Length: 120
Length: 271
Image 1 (cartoon, each protein chain N blue to C red):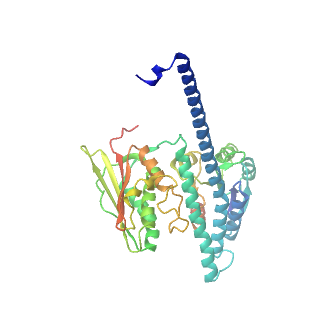
Image 2: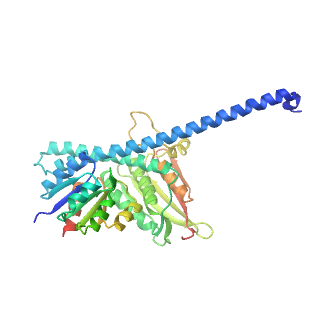
Image 3: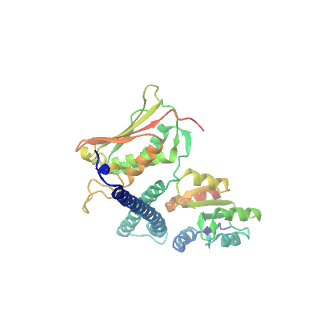
C-alpha cells in the first residue's frame, strides 16, 4: 500500500513544495494548515507519516499529537519540522512523542531518506 | 569657594530646578531610545522569520528541479538551478545568523549547560566544515586535546562559536592554506580551557582587533568588498563566550594569518 504523508504546515508556499516533492517520490500526500485541521485529517487513522510544523495559526503543532493520542489515532511516525536548531526544542518535541526532529529546510535528499528510514 | 556658594538662595534654587528638568529630559530620551531599540530588535526578529519561510519554499522547489524529479535537466540547466539552491542556502545562513543575534539580544537568553567533550565537539564542527574547506584545498586539523576533562557548558552555543570561528577561517584563507584548532587547560589548577582557531589567511590589522567583534561591523565595509556577511558572527560568538564567563580575542598580522582565542572556566559547579 502507498505510504500516506500528512503535511501540517501553515505556509502554502512551503506546503506546495513538499506536495510536489512527495508526490514525485511516489507518496500519497495530504495537507493541513491548522492544529484543528491536522487532527481532523489524521483522525481517520490512515496517516503513516506526519510532518509537523511547530508554529501553527491556532496553536502549538505539538497539540496535534496530544489531540490524536487522546483519540487513539497517533500516526506511526511523526517528524517535527522546526527552524530552531536547539536542544530545548528537540527535547520538547521528543517528550511530546515525535519520532524525530528535523531542522527545516532540510535538503530534500535527506528529507526523503529520513522518511524512508522511519518507514522501514 | 565653589560657584554655587556665591549664588543667592533664589538663584541656587533656580539652577537646581533647571538641572532637574534636564535630568528628567535625559531620562525620557534614554527610555525612548531603549524602547525604539527594542522595537527594532523585534522587527528584525519578525522580518527574519518571515523571510525564512518563502526562502525555504524556493530552495525546496529548486532542489526538486536539480535532482531531476520533474524530468532530467541538461548540464547548463542543472548548473543554473544549482545556483538558485546555493544562493538560497547562503541567504538562509545569513538570516539564521540574524535570528541568533536577535535571540541573544533579548534578556531571556540563558545557558543550557550539559557535560560533554569539547574535543568531540571540535571534531564534529571540523567534519561539518570539511566539504567547504576541501573546495579551497584547505586543511583543518586539531592539534591536541585528547586528554581534556569534559566541560560543563551550553553545547549548542559553543558549537555556534566554533562554527563561526572555523567558518571565518575558511572564508578568509586563500586556496591551499592551513587552519588549526588547539585546545589546552591552563591556569594554576588547570581551571581554564583555552581554545585557539588559527589560520594562514589574510589577517587583521591591529587597529581592527576590537572592531571585528562589534555587531554589524566589517573591516571592509565597501559595497565592492569581496566577503559579504551580516557582520554579526563574531558579535554573537563574543556574547556566547562571555555568557559562559570566558573571554574571546584575536591576535593577528596582516598577510600572515589570524589566531582567534577563547577561554572557558573549567571549575563550574554542576547543578
